[in-house]
Length: 233
Image (cartoon, rainbow, N blue to C red; front, side, top):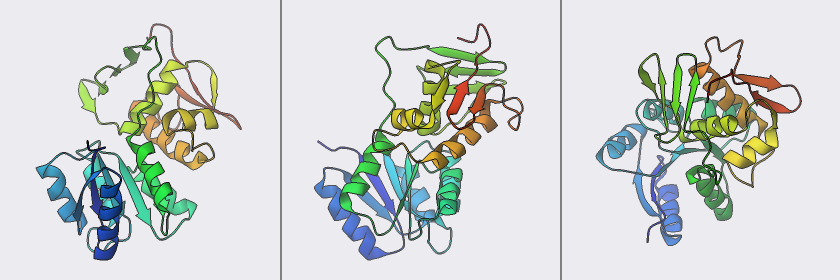
C-alpha cells in the first residue's frame, strides 16, 4: 500500500533519480518534473500528496513555482536548497512552502520532514468547534474552508492546522514550542521563524487590519494568544 504520491521537482537528473529510488523504497509513489513549468502541468494532470521542490532552478525558479502552485493548490510543499540561511527559510515559507530542508540532507531527515508535511494536527476527542465567526470571516473546520465577505479563501494545510489549534485554545498565551509541536510534530520546537511567517500569513487573511491584529495577538517572549470576541464559536 502506497504511503502517498510525491512529485519531485528539480533540474538535476541525478538528484531526481536518487530521490525517486529512495522514496519508492520507503513505500511512496514518486514522479518527477524537470522544471517549474513541467511541475505545474504534472499537478494539473493528476493528484499528488506532496511536492519536493528545488529552490535553485533555471527558468521559473523554485520560489516563483511555489507561489504559482499556491494560487490554485493546497498541496504540501517542501523546499530544497543548497543554503541554510534564515533568509532562505523565510523566503521559502513566505512563498507558500510548508517546510524547508538544506542540501546535503540525510534520508532519515528527509523522511521526517515528509511525514511532518503530510501530518495534520490531531483533532481532540471532543472534536472541538466546528465553526468560527470573526467579523466577516467564516471558518468551517469540518470542510476546512474559510469564507471572507462571501468569497472562499485558500489556506495552506499548515495555515489551516495552525488556525484550528489556536481556535481550540482561545484566550490564553500559547508558547512557540507548543504551537510548533502541535502543528508540525514532535521534532519541531525551535523553528520560531516558521511561526513568524505563518502567523503573518494568517493575519493577512483573517485580520481586518493585519498590522494591528485583534485576533492573533503576540505574547512577547512567549508565543501567541487567539483572542476571541464573545459569540465567535
